[in-house]
Image (cartoon, rainbow, N blue to C red; front, side, top):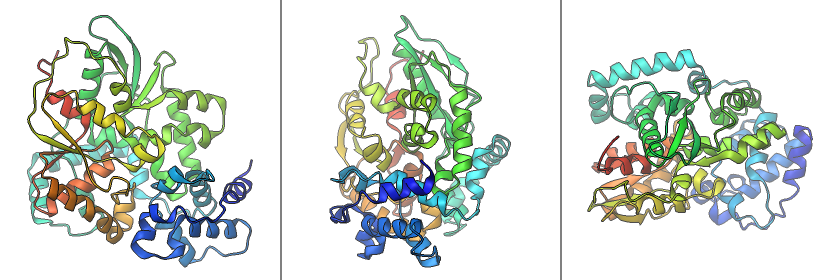
Length: 407
């Protein structure tokens, strides 16, 4: 089915019942019908039929959609809103390439950026910049405010054998942000998986998942990146694990993006690492130290609304003795990160984050657990601005901190 036919078919499934309205973050901010899923679907349908021109006003309504898909998760008519939005953005693609997306997706540029970030952190400039908010509310300033601490981590090995009796083989998806900002987390993940009896593949030929390109409507580049990832992962890996739910959500839908059986086979193997680990029987030999503290759990939209795996976070964290695991209030609402949304729409992003920060201030946890890098950075910046000394951490890293021995 071609792009326009798919848009018309998907939009036509909406019966305009309005049940999506209370679940839409942008409608909650404005109470403007055009900022709701129902309103946006009407706009997308009119554009596809040639009844409306894609002027600045219409494009603005579509651009301000977070793509959180809370509407899709509760829609009684099962409107595939994510696909509808993706296809409409591609249909209206304005050739405005995102420098951030292109930089992250290009290995040579990403390597240069990684080197610059390492020097920035090692020099102490990161802490000074964050403390004084030197770059203000610029795009770079906003990204740096949420930048995780820590220097460069060692390169990731392509293969890590299982410890003891091998239970299976898995592969880790690093993506662009993982390779750039979460290498320590990826080391934690491979060590934990190995300790649990899994051989771990980390293919060097993998790359960006394409999510930022999908968000801006660059479907051609997203499909090119998807094809590269399909070719990179070994067939012997029974599961492809993502440490970032934003990447995992798109990987899980590669079959829809590419519309071929090979992509469908790939998508069936994709699982969020938290869900994978939560579903395992943990051996008694893997002992975790008690942690008599409190962790609040943030549920990212991609994990909650697309992968439907948010309960795994609680199951996994409860492996840690004495740790009090609590749900962060308002988890049903997007935090405002949403890929590049935190940079492209800073006022709306910060307004949506405010409830999360207020909830953390009330709960007073020592940790805030989040399974998506964009959300983690956005929330960390908000907590820092509010003067809250709460560390944002991935559940896997918090678990590994408590492992009594690191083999």
